[in-house]
Length: 312
Image (cartoon, rainbow, N blue to C red; front, side, top):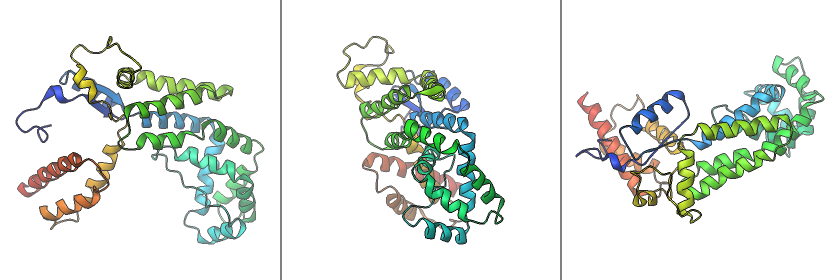
């Protein structure tokens, strides 16, 4: 905060604090609210939807195992990749979902639903003695319930990755981002079956535990003209403060992007990287950002970090 306001922290200028939903960060947010009285504490909604997607994965153990085993079959195996391309040249290689990348497991399940018969034919054409992963993948792909489970996942939850990506987009209106969240909620409410009910309850629990969601949703209603009353807002939150929420982020993905940029710039093997070159590299890395103020703030932060390194 002293980097932004070197002459003294302006506590009333901190209006929104967006974090992930890890317990220690939630606790930190509650503590910081005592220092910044106007601050709304919000947990990342894209991460919240990903947690719902994780609950879907937990309900389909065999599908999860199939995706994992097929990934192993073609990972660093050029001969099997060649077999795949010769047997099914018209379809892409199976995706390699990473659990920490939001929505990739649902995308993989949708892929297997779309190309199930082709994947089955390719797997059964590979010698089962090549590897344990091949043998297990062949057994799983022949499970009589597998295709039906994939159809259920794709038809009921296949939209989730698209809306996670939409929430990760920069510079969208608060009302547009919250409309995406409400769309996901409505779609999950339409899901049939016992699993659909459990997933919908999980989504509602995620929203209920997000202490700032209700406040930010009411602010969006005022900004879009759907609400004309400010009852229920904190007393110290003024009308002028609310105007700054028009493009308020509801995800923490920009922070994750900044970590990647700083990691590239500040790796240990950069031992003769002077400040001017850091500044130029930062411009190259951040040239997709439309807001010049973000770039200036990043330059100030890099300058401060560089000066501390020089002193050390």
